Image (cartoon, rainbow, N blue to C red; front, side, top):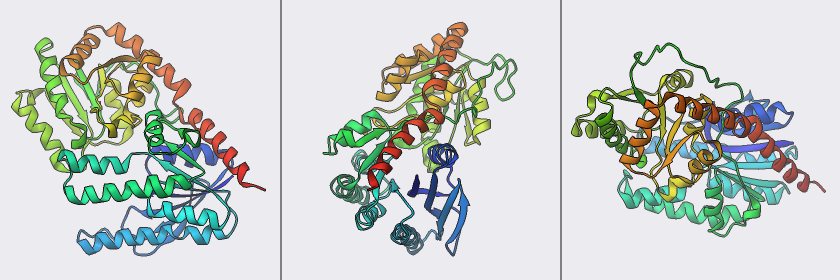
Length: 406
């Protein structure tokens, strides 16, 4: 196949569902994948560079903080995306795919009809619903702007873009059902969950701790600290764990999009008198972050139960399991499915006492934690490596590409 992808990811891309699934797995199977991406670093002029077995048309950007600079950055991104008309006109692509972009999605829907190419849309997050939810629950910085943006994106996505797509890839089965409720046929959608790179995460029995003190009972959270996730919940869980294990610690590896995200957690810890037991590590490169995972007794994956987050596919849960750690997660469509199928930990309600009880059980019963960790690692190897996921995606893409030919 030959595919042109227009994505909201910047260059160089960092998300594993781009770098590994497309840049390594699919490209490594001989498929030609070219990209239209905007530069992450300051860049005054567009350029073309090889990446992942194909080429990337890298768009210029403006990293200034003024309103004009922000507007110019968006305009430069749109201008780069509109190269798709010229590239599709060459006739060398079987498929055009757009990931998480709206103006580019409209352009691709039009161009695919003009040049008789198959059009795929990849939706990794329910952006319209997220903007609308943020405007209504008070987490948006500019509520009115978010409300307007949410409604515009909802109309663009569900009324103009997805009805014209030949196929839609979504993040989870729950998202597939949610999108179907907007009128998109289930048969034209495929759920592609998050996974891990084959062989990149190796479960090891950590006999010596280098980052966490020896003998220190602990549980840990790895991921974003954004307010929408309501992670002050973990401080209340920590308070209940300390009632039963007074010397326990919570390690938090990650950062938010805004300094106030972490500050909210610090203030909650101070209010509950658990600051001494909450260790904020910050954002780390993946290898070092996963070392904390390996050294922890238990790993937690709390997902605040909202319609927005219910449709996501948690990366952290799969990373924990791939590293052989027992997990405690709350009742979330995909988390519940994974834990039920794997036996890798406990799935409990969004409740401080339920979380604390499960964490204490695993800290105090190390053999049980090891057994659950082993089950989780085996499940990931069988179901959630990107080699396995790429098999599914490749089958769909080949079917779509074949249908495009006379």
